Length: 456
Image 1 (cartoon, rainbow, N blue to C red):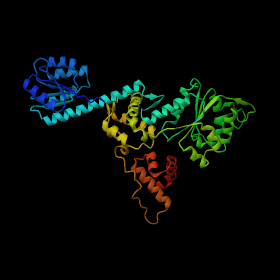
Image 2 (image 1 turned 180 degrees about the horizontal axis):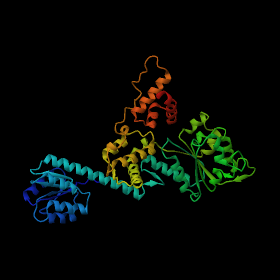
Image 3 (image 1 turned 135 degrees about the vertical axis):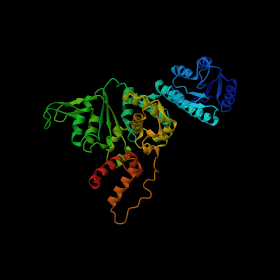
Image 4 (image 1 turned 90 degrees about the horizontal axis):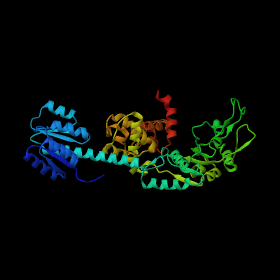
């Protein structure tokens, strides 16, 4: 954002008032230009393009109210402050209806005028910053569908660009919400397979008894209900990319079958006798640390080495907070298009809260919070009050400290009380509660299901 002094146009038919205002404003750090009447003020607004206009109301020819209407028709966002010695409630109300930034009576309270100008200056600065971010998005401060210009993300972009040129297998790691599927799609779109299909399979979302059928397909009559032929994901992704999300959640009994298919480059449908060749690049992802998943038996070691020619580890949002303003601006644009709103940007104070938050849900959580705030805003700006309570007033990370279970309480009941207390402290944000308690989000959800009967 530019640090140049803001330019203020003063329009008043009294020379003494113009001189006093010029002296005051310059002492406050503003650049000042002067006009002796409304007609000259209109000309000066066109030639000098001031950031702020201060105008007397009662002037010969074009009055201050007339000038306000003229200036607002040409530049509705420029703050216009009206000053008069003949103030009435009706005049003040009409001035505000016409878009005056403020209405000040003579004799001027200069401390109030200074505060009004400082507030107008902050809004101008915020508007310029919003324009800069929007221009940055338009210029393409992105990589594929990624948004961000932090050092951590530039390193990811360079790695994705290099990996995309090959056909090597890749494991993409990172916390939930960091954009692992986005990385896989970007690799696909930058590769020689971009014209081919991109097929995504979430290993944790498909029931174990259906997973083999999803991957390999089946022949008619292979099992009860198999009334026709169904191609599996390897066939569907032929000449393209197959993305295996949450690979460490794949049923252990299926992993050796997957390994054999990857090594032989041939697949046989369930109930079929014929093998099919396929030309597929396989990308995998996990929110677990892959070697840790191998050590705990969640992921076969030989399958891990088959998939892990390259590893791309996406940084959590808390490690690239400098990207939050640009991400938030992008999500505001999406929310405006989706909900037919007209939000311009986040207030500085709202952005400060977003940058201070720990983001256990990463970019996905930020997108949801910004979309919610844009809906609540109803105007041009997202204010701090539009953000969730746990973002406005983040509780101390030591939520669990000071928790004491009364004598005689079972460990299970103490655990339940601690989890519920932490959820209350985080505004029922399960991801944040899980982070503070050192648990997985799935564990929190499962625990809550078991508590349902106890809470009735």
